[in-house]
Length: 536
Image (tube, rainbow, N blue to C red; front, side):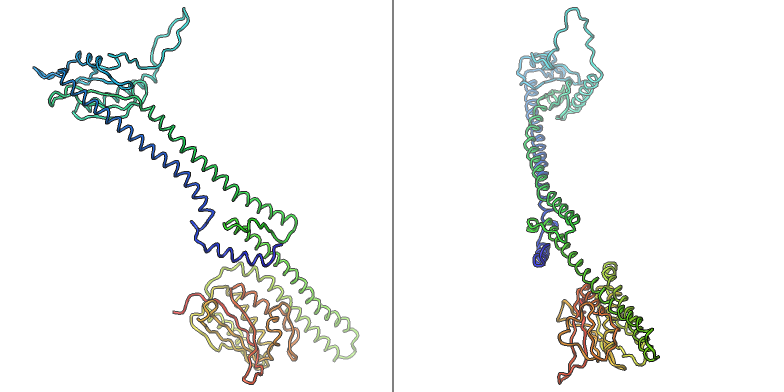
């Protein structure tokens, strides 16, 4: 079991750790988030970079093809292939011969269309360039050959390619240069540029240049993306490993330690290497250790309470049994009346003891069940004192509120707080002489910002021995001066008062009121509580 010193040291560390600035309120969460964001930034940054590169490559390719097409279009006019006398026209035969005799770079294709959009020349047809894939192996001799009929998919692909090309040529025939990225008859992506061929201002046809190296460019981009993807994958794997080592495994260890506490009926849990961590896992380990230590302390207190209850109940029971055994032996009515009176006192004492034990055992449940709310102590004390005055007998001490203050609001639970003041008033009345007075005062001291509200209960009794000013709050403290009624108190009332005040973040203490000559005038109990809000 961890020591009280280690637990007390751990609690301030938790408070200091929570006060430190953390990303999103969590250091470990910020670390995990940073790793995941790093991997995503690497991946998305690379993808964005390559997309811009791809767009730039395509635009550069289109610009290069546009310059070539413009140059070729000008050459057509200079060579007389576009004629204007007597009528503007395009010499189809001369254009085909020119495409055959001029160099067209590998991977490029030049086409010439007339003013009606009909193809009149194709560099693939007038040169040695043969498009397509290698021929399949030859069939064995004597094998019947199936007709070379294109499949429906090939027909659809060819029709889509022709439609895209025709649309581009039609737009170019209007006089505006066109550039696009489309697919050719083989289904490959090509960068295409179509320029109108003019004689002066009249459009005589369209010159189309295609570059079919787009797929190679995209493959190169994909290969360039692989290092980024591999780095992102490595970072994610590292993040997973870190999460496993620094989160999953410690949580598993904490779970196993908790199971060990349950199976071995131990009183506390201790994982020193985890308690030294400065993140949430360390907070969790320290919180579990503090929790089990608190539970161990509570169990010890329950055991002591059960032993004290057993001892205190035995005293009146022993007295009652002795009186009952003696009652048949008495011979006079006076002795019988004395025994009967003793029995009644013991029964009242036992009833009061059982009632206070029941209240003390339910106190923790009541404090955890009700939610705190703002309570005006003026109203609460006024209601309690009004009940006492309404039911007071002539020979009983009076209870009155001597002073009050504004803005006396406290966050708490009205039923337990009411029990605090009732127990203190009952204790003061039990020590006050007949016809005496119990004075309750409420004040506020803003020089004490933590506990500004002060409630004092004064009596005119014999006071409290100086050595017992602190022990009066212990359970079953029943030391009483001579002349006070025996059995009227169980010794639990003041213990309950301290427990409730502590649960509300307050403080309670006892002292003796003394005159100028040092004579004790009575006892005083002072309750200090935190306030809600500030004085206006």
